Length: 298
Image (cartoon, rainbow, N blue to C red; front, side):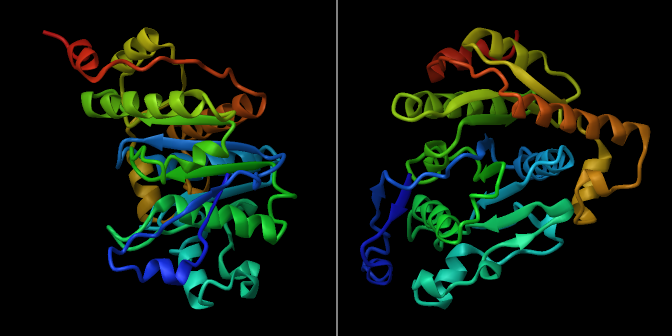
C-alpha cells in the first residue's frame, strides 16, 4: 500500500503542522521477498538489518534496504555515509517527484546492496507513513523493484502507529529483534499485537524472533513458547559489533576471527532460512498486565 497526499506542499503548511494522507491500495512492491524488522528502540535493528542485507547479497540475491527512521542512519555501515533521504530529495524539487533521478535517493552499498533512507518529517509535524509510501512510490516509478529479490524495511523503534506500521502492509514477514530482558520483551509483545492486527487485512505474517545482544535467551524462549513465536537467530553481545559500528562497516568487512566467523555464519544461515520461506507464525499477544506478571521471577 502506498500513502499519497493530494497536495504535499499545502499539507505541510497547515497551521497544525500535520501531513494529511490518504491510502492508495493499488501500489504494491511486486515479486520481491519483503521483510520488515521491528524491535525496541536501540536494540540493534539497523545492525541486524544491514548485516542481514549483506548475507542475502552473499547468497547472490539483489537486495534493497529501506531505512524508515527520521535519523536516516539505517544504512551507514553499508554506504559509509549518511545517505540523503527521500523526504529531502522531494523537498529539493518541491515535491515534483518526476524531476528526481535514481541517484538522488538511492545509494549503492557494500556488496551491491542498494540503500534508501526514507527519512521523515520534523518531530511532531507529520506522518511517517507518508514518507514510507512516497518511498515505495518512487521505487516503483523508477522500476527499481523489478530487479530486486529482497527488500528489507528497517523500522523506527517499537512505534506501532498507523504511520510506522505501514511497512507491514508491504511485508511478507515481520521479524522482531529483542534482547533477553523485560523492556525488550514487553516491546516485542506490543509489536506482535500490531502484526496480528495487520495480518487480518494484509498478507504479512510473523517470521520469528532474532535474539540480539544477549548471552542467554531463556526469557525470550519462555515468552515465545507462551504466545506461539519462534527464535530464528541468536547474536550475542560481542565487542566486534560495537567496533563495526565505529568503523562504519558491516560485520562482513571486519578483520576475521573465529568469533566473528560464527556471527557471519549465523547471518548467512538466517538469510538462507528466510529465503527458503521460513515458517510463518500465528502468535497471539498477551495483555499488558498478563505479560507484566509473566515476565521475570521471584
